[in-house]
Amino acid sequence: MKTSQAIRLMVVIFLLMTIASNGQTSLFRSGIFLHHSTGGCIWGPNGGTVSVPQQMAIYNSLHGYTGSDAVSMTETWYPSYTDNEWVTWHTIFEQNSPENISNYFAGNPIIMIKSCFPASSVYSWGTPDDTLNPSQKSVENYKWHWRHIVEVMRDHPDNFFVIWTNAPLVQGATSANEAFLSHQFCKWAKDTLAQGLDPLCGSFPENVYVFDFFHKLVNSSYYLPAGYAASPGDSHPNTAATALVTPQLVTEVFDHAIAYEDLIGL
Image 1: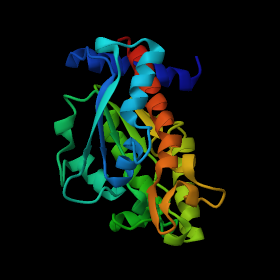
Image 2: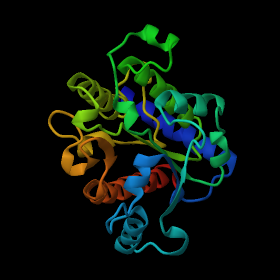
Image 3: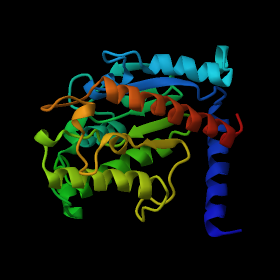
């Protein structure tokens, strides 16, 4: 057996033992979306007809899911009294501060989180020493925040977590360098971290899924195009962005959450 296969098998066995000891029996079909304004735009309908509830109804119909098998999700503004930058999510997950994320674990098999478009103002590549200033927006700090967030998620196999990559900015709200750095971070999150190729994080937890929101909307220069923006000076996604992203979101989230059910034998 190859080493990677052996590691994967050990991880699966560990997950099964942990979930069995905690008495987990519920399916991963329901949960909560914790977001601010950009997430609210994608939740929809955002001036159009497409929304997450509407797409969940379509998903249930296509798969014949009814009753306890049906997928569902609620949403709320979170964190309530501060920003949702990656440094804030880091402290929320590791320290339950400034708000207690663990309050949501028991009642929500699926927990989905995101940061809003200010996170795409990435100022530098940075160095490992950036962690001395956690709020500094560098690629190195963002990687550091995500590694710590994902490690906490790994420790809660009773939940399936979805974490979005950055929300892109319109050209008038950023620079070419910032847009490129945001792209590089999001590419690392999806193509390196989520593939288990990050040398510091190692294997990626089976109960976490990276939704690459950034690359679903950006143009070749890594800006949010005018056709997907509320206005040339407003980076909130518009109706067209909602119509594009929301069906993909619902499909990806629930396809992978249900695959996790299969993995752990529910």
